Image (cartoon, rainbow, N blue to C red; front, side, top):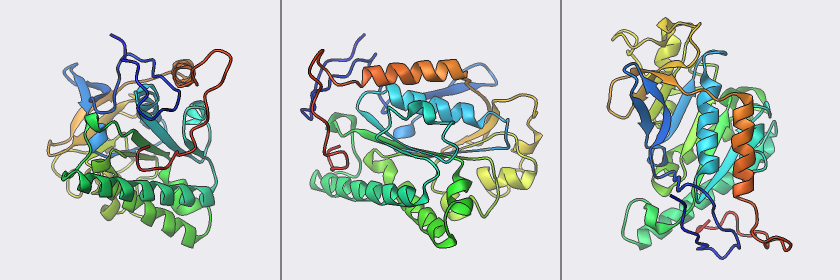
Length: 292
């Protein structure tokens, strides 16, 4: 089944894809019974955390690959290491490396888009966007959150980044602008409860202590038996997923090799290319307008 060719914004671009949409549940892996685990990401935010080597980056790249292949979806990527999400640099509307000033500027622009969308939603006498609105889904993915909140820039810049991010996480989910954030430093200074509790989905890979597990899943969960520190560190991809009101449960996140990641990214870049054989399509100059 192929996507119906349409160009609602008159950009000269025609999507070529198998009908993948961020409004459809996103596949993230399997549970302990072998059943597919699907998440409704467009109306939720996703927090991913765990120690290095636990499989966190696999889920981050799965989300990036899904977003890159989805119709009418735009990516904003933060990656201070450059290489984790660098495969998608030609696909993203914005790619922010180790540049705290640019990171703050982009978050401000995203909040402006979110405010504009909410005013439009209000005019439609509704409380959230729908698939049929044809507003693009803007997916913001942040790899290694700690770099932007504790390492790069001055303490004032770090604080401003955290405040702006909290605002985007608060506002984004109902206007088609979900946030996916990941960190390998699971401590309260990196993920304060006021920020963590805004993420409806939380995925904890292996942690070093039960306190670190609670930082991700919520206070007291380790005492109830939901403890990511008990996950086998030699089994990358195993994680505890807390999704909505359901108690945390074990999953095995899907894994993508470097070759697969770059194949997906290359195909996504080709899929999003300007139409026309010899004449390039005009550039999009309204990237941050409400109807983006």
